[in-house]
Amino acid sequence: MKKVKYSEITPEKIYLRRREFVKKLGFSTGSLMIGQNMIGKAFAANDNLQEKITERRYVTTYNNYYEFGTRKSDPVEKSQNFKTSPWNLTIDGEVEKKITLTVNEIKNSFPIEEKIYRLRCVEGWSMVIPWMGFSLNKLLEKASPNGKAKFVEFTTVFDPEQMPGQRYPILKWPYKEGLRIDEAMHPLTTMVTGLYGKELPNQNGAPLRLIVPWKYGFKSSKAIVNIKLVEKMPISSWMQASPKEYGFYSNVNPRVNHPRWSQASERVIGSGILSERIPTTMFNGYGDQVANLYSGMDLKKNF
Ligand SMILES: Nc1nc2c(c(=O)[nH]1)N[C@H]1C(S)=C(S)[C@@H](COP(=O)(O)O)O[C@H]1N2
Ligand SMILES: [Mo]
Image (cartoon, rainbow, N blue to C red; front, side, top):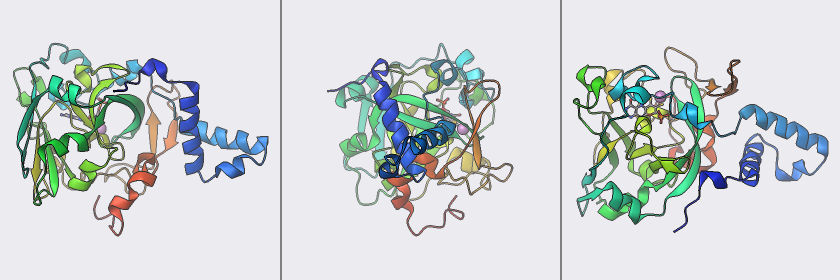
């Protein structure tokens, strides 16, 4: 069982990520060999993309978690006494084997790995975060989805005593999100148990949250208590609140604007008072891994 710690992130690792980005910009590794000049240019372009891990203090103080309020500072201020233990997760619906597991059982069942993924909020900002977790497909396989399982619905805990935001009809509570089964089974779809090599802070969705790196941040539900395999496309809380603005797919797409703002670029959180903006990339930069899930689909219609 290999655990990678945040402290083990080497310059080489960051260098490798950079090379990935250089490739995405259309330079082949071969052309990088042509001359120093070329390398300089490619890296400068890459530096604009800021493939740099966001400082922890921003990730843990600038949050969206409407159960604790709608201000960015509400989650860190109001979630500190939230009880994350005992906590059970139930996987049911169209499965051969309905299961209920404690968080500890889950953490001990799979190797927890560090996965550095960008979180792109639909509001137009992003952070690059070292998540700790494992691919959701390993957990889903434990319940053996049956032939009718076409979609997966994720439900956040409903506990208005502890979650002041749930006392107001900001969204239809509990928070619900959904994925198509092949999206949920994709190895990038990650069950998150920690951040920066440590426990997951309450404001980031402890004890269990999802990260779906190629979709807008709201698809990545926090404090999950139920995962239901279903036959029909689930209606998420955001689709319910505003169907013209939030579609089921919600793939990051710089060419499909939100009805009220452009999605062409994003603000890099933690980049200083000048608040650097970088171009948003298709599928949040993970297109080489996920584009095939949508071949033949009109992504403007299926937004
Ligand atoms: N249950 C729940 N999950 C949620 C939200 C929420 O309000 N409630 N906000 C979403 C949004 S809009 C974003 S951008 C991310 C933010 O994750 P972070 O605070 O860990 O950066 O969580 C998502 N998951
Ligand atoms: Mo978001």
